[in-house]
Image (cartoon, rainbow, N blue to C red; front, side, top):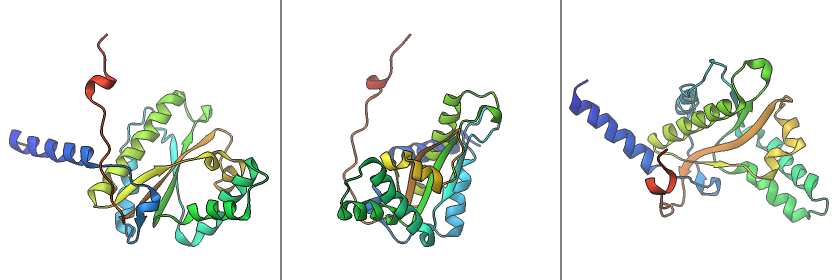
Length: 197
């Protein structure tokens, strides 16, 4: 690759990175990625750094026909932490499950039996997998965003997703077409997050 070609690749990569922004699942709709595009988004996760080649995370796709299960889990998780939640509040919790056409949960695998790699390294690997997926979706022209919230860490959610004792839910990724844009958020300057030893 010539220096000119290398510069073009670098410029394209930096443009992709710096133009990506979080899009709330509320702002994402159809069309979502087709099966081929979804496959590319999911495959991008496998390029994440992975010390020991443990694949210390896993992904669970929640297809449209199974969203009702997630909806009930959201409602039950709300009741888990607030026994006095109203019917309206429970319905609002259910509605979260139906936002965006493509939905995936990211789960960290922290079982010591998996290998000696430190849990922090495993979480970093999972974070890199997430970023790879977000950038790939963005390169395809989709919007994408992460979501978590207290329901994610409920016992009911653990049961729904079959989480083992050493597995931790990290977040959901939602991908779809941006229905309503928003102004780009200001990014921190280098001086805001760097120092010299």
